[in-house]
Image (cartoon, rainbow, N blue to C red; front, side, top):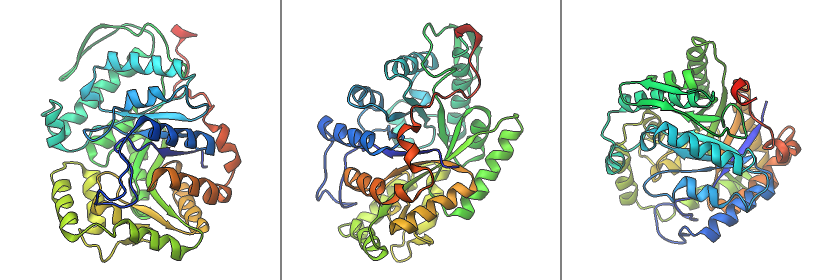
Amino acid sequence: MLQDILWFVPGMGDTRYLGTQNTRRNTSHDYLATVAKTIDALGFSGALHPTGFGCEDSWVMASSMIPLTKRMKFLIAFRPGSLSPTLAARMAATFDRFSDGRLLLNIITGGDPVELAGDGMFLSHDERYEVTDEFLEVWRGLFTGQEVNFEGKHIQIKGGRLAFPPAQLPYPPLFFGGSSPAAIEVAAKHVDVYLTLGEPPKDTKEKFDRVRAAAAKYGRHMRFGVRLHVIVRETEEEAWKAANDLLKYASDDVIAQNQAHLARFDSVGQSRMASLHGGDRGSLEVSPNLWAGIGLVNKGVGTALVGSPEIVAARLMEYVELGADTFILSGYPHLEEAYRVAELVFPLLPDWQNMVGANNRVFHPAGIPSTWQ
């Protein structure tokens, strides 16, 4: 059953065309706040605030928008290796209380080794997931309200405490994505919502099945979400024209440069995105209405659902039938495409009228700790 549709605050800037500086919208608080207020007004459940070298800081960006919005939740992305679990827990609890329970957390582990080295992290792919595993074990312990002592391979905590609880008990929901065996193991043990980038439904089903089986070993169940771009227009012909126009200024040289940059990533999910298009701009519809053109020039989610409102709604519901109840969507430019999705697609989705109030739900993934009752 569909529960949540989130949008995206473009903390790295926005554009009408990929692979070029033409029509680029640089980040400013005014523009990002306009996007956030629009998301809030249109009835999206919330929005993802990204993290990384090329982004405005996700915590500061989201915090500045608490008083500007009423309903939307803030899915803040951050890397466990960049913060201690006790500091992150305090930040999260404060944000959640000050926003009246509107915090969600997106745990990021994979990525670009060169960018990570710039932040002082020199661990291998699997070692980073070891850090995430230890971080989340400490994190979840802190939100019991008890003292935490932990001696791990990467993290050591003595007498860790969280003095003030969050609004959402026992903690704000944890979102997490990753396609490698190490990532799926972390998800199975710790997270509330497992995310996948937008892959063809058959591949998504296979991944969801693997995660379900891994979670079952720990006696856990989890929700599933899909991260996708959307290009929707009143007709399918208009939508495909808009998709092709996104790359109208992306030359073959620009695509080659971006593919060389992405090749250095050690992310399995990023590799799966690259395998969909193979660097070839000639065969980009990798599944009905699933277009891989964005992955030619952008990192992260490289696919978009393209079509009329009826087609986009039907394709989204295919993922729901596989078990997804959450979507994190985006489109270029993010302000205009948010209106198109809300106006054209929302009315075609089951129970879409309830989405405006959906983000007021209080999340209780594991019950309320007695310490804070």
